[in-house]
Image 1 (cartoon, rainbow, N blue to C red):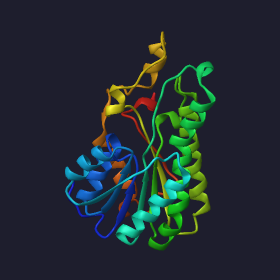
Image 2 (image 1 turned 180 degrees about the vertical axis):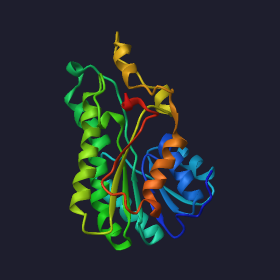
Image 3 (image 1 turned 45 degrees about the vertical axis):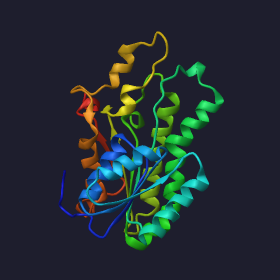
Length: 250
């Protein structure tokens, strides 16, 4: 684990922090000196992440599909630590479904989890980030730059995250706030081992999006998130950084 202290004096709010990439980001940024407000839906797992972390971490519960809860979470982070420098919008979920079988409720829920929460958290955080010359790192997916089978809602939402990142980058181009996006490929996370596929799914289509080198460790992707959140990336604004072990190169 890195211990460069590059985030000393900084406060980071990280969503989807109870496992996978979110937990990896919590551990990395806290080890590098950030005060971290780690939020998610599982209080027990959040406590485990905080206990496994070197550094100062506070936790809170958040359902990103609730706009008011998003606003309250940003307020709670600022109240707890006095400022906000970094927002990592990591919360999301990928469910594979045949498009004709997607219900209205599933469509709206997928967009709320994977896109709307990112918008409402960013909206609430921006006034604070303007005060600290802070930055946002959105987590989309390779599904935000290419299509994925059985993933119409998820891919639409992640393309939306890419578009949101670019729109905010242009809107805040004349400030010192930065907004960037990471698009990971397949990661070795708990969700990857429990995901379900439609009956009789065409796995040749599904495996088109698998990294050529296998599932990536979440810690490796967290390194890219941390770089974009750091002062070392001061010239990086509006970037859509694919991290997929070479999948989209071919």
